[in-house]
Length: 113
Length: 121
Image 1 (spheres, rainbow over the protein chains, first blue to last red):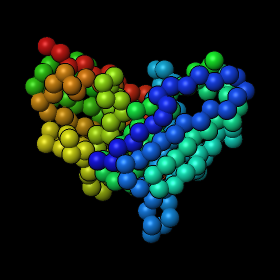
Image 2 (image 1 turned 90 degrees about the vertical axis):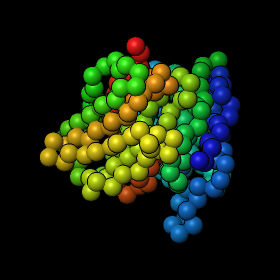
Image 3 (image 1 turned 90 degrees about the horizontal axis):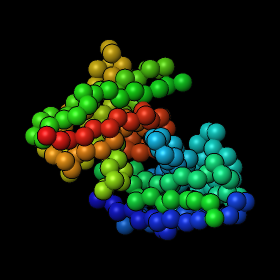
Image 4 (image 1 turned 135 degrees about the horizontal axis):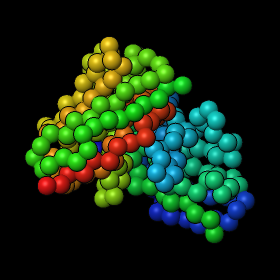
């Protein structure tokens, strides 16, 4: 299985400041034939299912605010929130869907400092 | 818009079979890949398996020997059966849709609200 490792496990950021979450895969999730990274980011708030934020590593899902950005390729990926808002408090997960089984990172909890 | 709703019998006893159904409303079940994902405190999010409306399935190897996923397009439903459950199978179970034109194992753009399944005698 491809192992997804996120860092940090948690972070506290002041309102309006930048939050950065890293995700590393144990092998590349870049499919050479279409040059796409099979990597998704989700946001999960308490009592809710995960919500898709990005797919193909950097394609923003409809309705996701543009303060969120996804980047990276191969094995190293980043989710950034440029100006943290109170409603962004949540746990964030990366997931690779390059190979079966699709695997998730352990999650990063984002809180307000 | 498309909505998913999980349904199941509630608590399950050890060594019994867990059965869940996901009902798709607001759109057709056809042409998409549909997955089951579970979330437990000990193992985080775990992809269980997926099915296409053609009937093609793909299972997590860790569960494959106990797992069956099926689809009933006439009812706009797909289902999960997990046999010989233990306490380790206690989790919130979600059904989810892989977005059109995306990967089939992830990039889930629609999720059910989840149903808590407790395995206990």
